[in-house]
Image 1: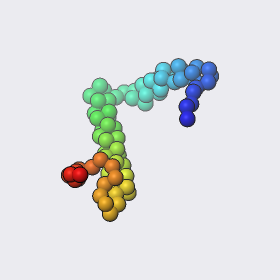
Image 2 (image 1 turned 45 degrees about the vertical axis):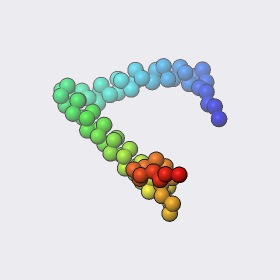
Image 3 (image 1 turned 60 degrees about the horizontal axis):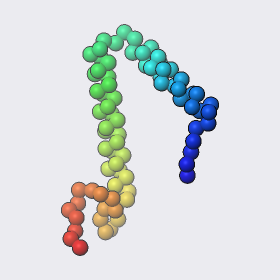
Length: 79
């Protein structure tokens, strides 16, 4: 399946990033550079934790009696 943006969709996306930037700047008003850097660090760690947890949960769901069906830390068997 292939999806494409309409002309209106392209127009909206061109306006989106400046709007997001203005919103972020408004929310970060009064934060020092150090505080902003620290916040970004915390958010990145939260995202990484979520990604790791999600990946591990998916691996557990996809495991069967034969072992992993996706790449995992198990030693590959020789065939």
